[in-house]
Image: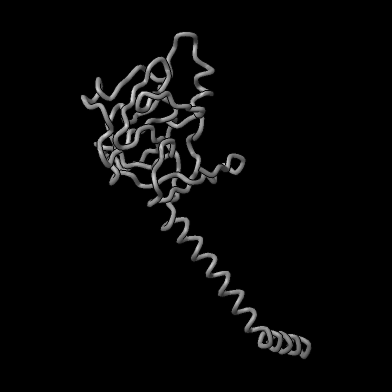
Amino acid sequence: MQTWKKLRTKFKNKLKKNAYPLSILGGLFLTVIILTYIIANVVWINGEVRGKSMQPNFYNGDRFFAAPNAAIHRGDILVIDPPGSVQDKPFIKRVIGLPGDQITFKNDVTYINGKAINEPYLDPYKARLQPGQLLTPNFSLQTSFGTKKVPANSYFVLGDNRRQSVDSRVFGFVTHDRVIGVVKMRFWPLNRVTFY
């Protein structure tokens, strides 16, 4: 019994001597937890892919971080609240057209303002097509929407899996206020972590 009391006293004395360093470590640990939560849920949006529309670049269940106030460029991947949606279900789509752009798809080539653009993210699907098949059906803003250009403060977005994507070809242009964020990092699965 005496030994137990001695050990307890010894432990209390050590704790008193190390109280300051332990409180600093505890404070640092708590700070890291709080900052991680803020970055993952306030500064950045933590999201999960649902569906096949962004394959082969994003698969169902992939997890990502998106920045809500980032600048938007052609080729960026956006988290959007699609126009006309009655479900509380954000989509992720790739920006093809920026405000003022003229867009045409002809023979599986995307033309922006009359110039063909390179879309390497489509190559895996194009490689599987039979001769004469198109991944992206011929299309123009003029024939589909009666306008030559993407309106001001709006974007034209598509899924990378062009044959299985509900995107701007269906719901039209996405106004800036419907953009939830710009995807900056896929963090899950770990073997496919990617920064954008």
